[in-house]
Image 1 (spheres, rainbow, N blue to C red):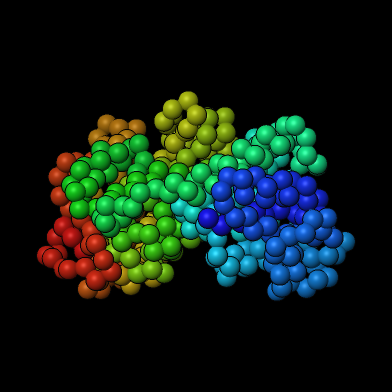
Image 2 (cartoon, rainbow, N blue to C red):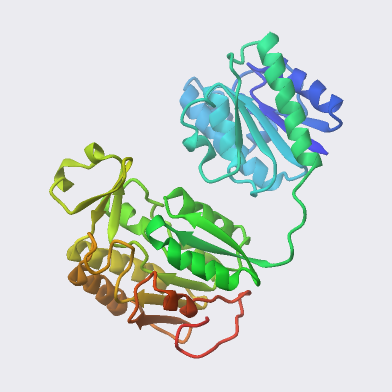
Length: 402
């Protein structure tokens, strides 16, 4: 077992030396990497010059520490793209070191053990972890020399990363994995789809909260998915209209890049997400708002907004060359979008459907199918299936399979 131990050897030399000893004691080999921007105080296995080979020395060693840290982070990311002779990675750092090391960690495959011991681990770690599986561990004290507390923390980290590496997850059952997107208001639909497919596929469900969509697409880009059942495309609403659960502008990008078999729908495109009522921007305060729970407030999308959303999705789908079906449940696109429900608005729905239909360029591989059903109707599940490879078989044109 080869553990990559990464830190800034100009300020964390004692800690890196201690980790090397602990990892060897735990039964693994430590490969120490310096990502510092100053002269190292500890002899490492991979020097900062090797990591930063593609960066000008004037940037990495310049007086502007912020620019140097950013350059080294980019260099470490590039370094890891080429250097894969390790089984796990353990990083240590304060603000600069955490930024550098986690930037590289985020590019590594999901499942490869990654741990970051950081002075920042008890705060908002979203920018450092993003949609990866990095384990953040608080250093408790600052990493400014060894002490009784830091020795305990670092030793625990060393043995933990070796344990992760020594006991990997068992091999899967051979089923192809498919990604599915779900929200509370589309749960009945997705649950039925899973029941229909779980005997044949490994069903990976992603909560459509921004990070969920990005995590699914990262797996798609990593060739971990055989296809996607995108019931709940609601993250697009938040991206276009300023909600808090956006997956960003690259939503659906991986589907196009990987040419994945794709079945999509309009789940929860009737809503934009905000936090508690007081967090809703002033310009939206007079809109149709619905308290999903005390922490989340939903805003109904208007007809004009639905046209914008439909056109955006259609443009993204037009870039997808793999087998694609997009299903429109004409009677309701979420639990609140039903007769008598707080978001029932046939005109807004019609604007969404028309924009999708007029914007989508249909081909033999790319088709839109309208169905006189609600998204959570039991009958809707019979319209969902997906191919298990990038060369799926074709069936009839009724939307039952790609």
